[in-house]
Image 1 (cartoon, rainbow, N blue to C red):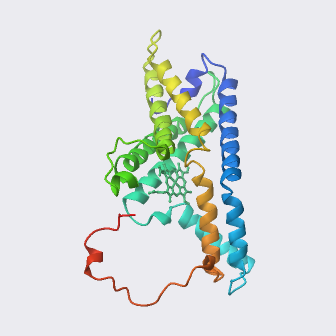
Image 2: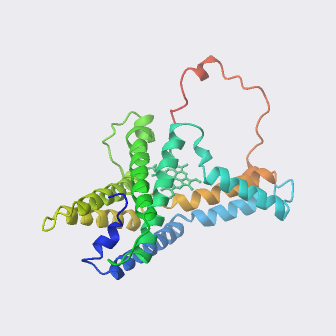
Length: 266
Ligand code: HEM
């Protein structure tokens, strides 16, 4: 199963053009959902106005070289390793899910656009990356959802309490999990049985929810967070600090209580 392109097997009964149209439709849904979100929340407008205002209190004019260096460091650390989440489980779970999703999406696009005819010979690396990406997403997503999300971790809510904010992570887990089960069942070659088709439908529906739900979910954070991290680090480097007061250089004296438990009450 790990080395079989599930889309080329599917293409024996569904024309590859439909698979390609589906992917394009999902990309359009993400673009439209993000634009509507930006218009509704006015977050990008606020972001640029705030950055312009903060620039007025800059103590240093950054050269192009310095800006490139700050942006490169942000890409390598803040974005590629989500350093905002600090060291520990939260960051590990996010990296697992984030890179799993990236691998899953890239290999899906490559297999659907380059190797989805039944006669095509898919290099074994692509289906392997697709399955591993899906497994990583399920593991990272479940780790986060069952154990680390704030409602459960800090607010003692039961793990099965589902709210709108869970739409993104649950849809993400569902797409990967249903994709894996569909691939497995299809590979069993059950001929007239319907099992794989049911999971194919679940896989399609969960993708529609994930990509069609961008406006209502946290999907767009993957675009906003990198932008915010670059702005924050540029503001740090030019001394404007987004108009926040400088860090105190006084000794950290918070009393003994500070070491008794991890900070987790937000
Ligand atoms: C393919 C890209 C990405 C995926 C699939 C992804 C996935 C996720 C998921 C599933 C969550 C949990 C959402 C929830 O609260 O229910 C999350 C939260 C978060 N993500 Fe991402 N993410 C991506 C990119 C990024 C990037 C590029 C950054 C930062 C530069 C980032 C920073 C964060 C932060 C700070 C949280 C909050 C974590 C927490 O509450 O513990 N993410 N992400």
